[in-house]
Length: 197
Image (cartoon, rainbow, N blue to C red):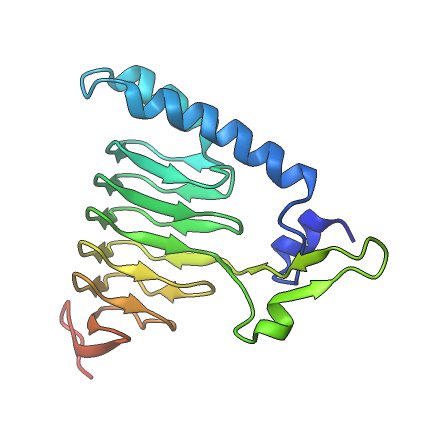
């Protein structure tokens, strides 16, 4: 199994493998160009996003500055708005549905490391060098969601369609459809869009 296959399967992988360095280099080059373009240069920006992302729908707006790791693992539906200063750590897939609003300073993290120090850094038997353990899990955001400013979504989370994530919330687990959630860690406050708890 290649390091890329391990990564996409959610298994421990070497994030310093050359393929990931190549992905990052490509993304950094495209982002540098993207983030220096003027707001009015919409066609040029759209072309860069088409090259950067794995898939992009119609009527997508991504404000500058925008940061991502690889870009290739970001899949956006139609009518998506991403405001300024957002960070998408897309070591695994980030799938965003249609009609989604993502406010300023939102952070989506697919990558993580073991909590225990002894598991985070392990000596490689062949080289004797310390190897940092990393794993990545996909994030899915359903149709019609709104993520408030400064919200943080952690690896492996699915946010059900129609849900609203309050500003500054930290999403550590899956959120059911049509839920209003707030807090750190966030919790469901009530159902919305005509649904009952």
